[in-house]
Image (cartoon, rainbow, N blue to C red; front, top):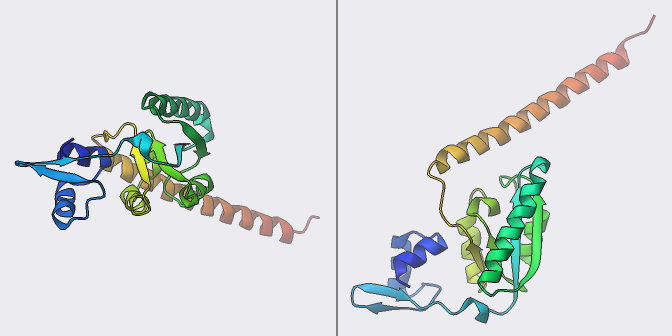
Length: 190
């Protein structure tokens, strides 16, 4: 596979991968063939350890979508001849760091491959940093559908605003409840 295809698959910018190749820091074996740089990836089945599927939805209303996502990713892994040893499912936002199951998965050194359907299902922001940390440990994150939505920036800003508004409304509601409770406690009944 050439370096450009590899960068698309891994979600790395082509110039970054080329710089890594020049500096000898590319995490996979590669060689120059004329003007092309060919990446020699080891067969995935040769990687020892557990392959885990990570699936997430944002709300309990989408629980049926969670089951479908697990089924799609597991079927994709089976088509690649990988035995899925663990399935992690969570309901929650990807914007906060409160995904206990994912954090446990990342801490578990026996899990060498994490398979997700979409990069934003794994983490809305900073997935590249997690991938780099995993690669440094000889582990990796595989994305079944690496294509990005054309309006990712709009989607990300909407998600951030939604999250912030939910926090503000939650605080406001709690403050209103406190005011009502104090008023009820201090009011004298005739």
